[in-house]
Length: 156
Image (cartoon, helix red, strand yellow):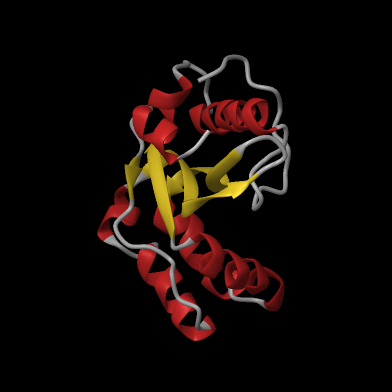
């Protein structure tokens, strides 16, 4: 699974990207990316962070480094993490990934359209289905994902 597969599912790219190799500039880019008008209006979505070049996985390769969801807007969900993503622990990932695999862009789609379900929480269902697809393709989850979701009721 990669950004082409996401595009085929109706995902859109958030304008801008994370490409700075300077920590202070990176933190500003992160804050700006998720403060955009588009991010402030993207609500109830499932999203993925993707690099320009694919990253080798256990099986195959993928440029998806994170799959997430939010009932809030992308801005409300992510903007507050600018400092945390710039911490020593997290910065080490970006410091490696950006020079090796290129800028990180954010793609998002309406969770209800992706989940194709009438569940109360389409965001959870959409995220679980995408992670399930990713796992089937690569036998592991994206590198930035830390939690394993419940098994989806249906595939995407």
